[in-house]
Length: 465
Ligand code: MN
Ligand code: MN
Image (tube, rainbow, N blue to C red; front, side, top):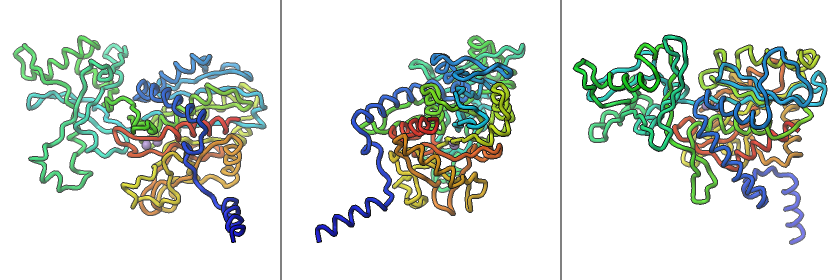
């Protein structure tokens, strides 16, 4: 009987698929790497809260690693380490490999560096009730009520009347003031709380408090004048300059370890810097025989449109220019290229178990999660990757010792979402989604596991190998 049990056990070990917790699987030395890598990531998060800052920070890291700026038409050869900046909001960091690119294609990892936030309107400043406010229009899919009653920082650029540009970042330094969106006190909130969650704070109530000190001049809008005087003194701005400004209110929180054991990280904008940072560092850190590109793009949260979203032809142009510079036929190059569209997915949350189908949900710390398809209700709007390509990626991960899992975003009839995958697949490039599971996605402060972050990095290294 004992013999039979052990045989059955062996058979089930051979035949059953089992997800594993990466922390449990990792050796002591690998665990150290997991935690050390997370420190670099937290520094990146704090330096890069907007797509412009993420682009600048990525370029800074690339320069330190010996990468130089590329412009269309530049000559390229094996071993070259370059980066291409698109309008200061998106950057492609790439290495030219030794393989013939016409046979081998490109290896692309595409992530986005924009995140949900509260954008300032073009005519925003007014005062009322002893406070000066900026009117806003939120960016991306948010639960509006989550953005009230927390400290906010203002980031962005102002293009002044004379065409000169000035950058602004207030609320990140220890002694900086911060900004604020008001909520209603519970004493007066009975009607509010009885309403639908999507309506308890309306878009036009997301006004950011930016001042409260009346100016000494005897004018009608004294607090507004104080705010404008400070903006004029510090940034050479007058009210009209808001017309050509891009200012965003983002949570003023820093990235912090979460939990007694520090296994998790809480931060603003894990979606999708938790994929963009590993994409960037994988290309910076590792030589490859393949030609590899980390594409860090903008505007994913609002549909990947515009000149800095992945749908812009500039990314196709870049791939074509690389092919041309290497003397290769672009159509052949892209037909042999492969892409990991790297964006976050929802982690299974036992507090909201009802919206997940647990067998096919990403479980925290079980590694980066592959979504063969995304979309919603019947895979609508999805790049559904071919089994052959999934198999190829799976083999590379096995060879690279990557702990990973597959995932769907919630129950079939409930949720859904899209990524940049379908736009890259449009170019005749095999593409599959792979990214880190997130708790409280799109909240001002989201949570991820350090194990999943490092698994994502290792997956990219294996893909590039
Ligand atoms: Mn995303
Ligand atoms: Mn998102």
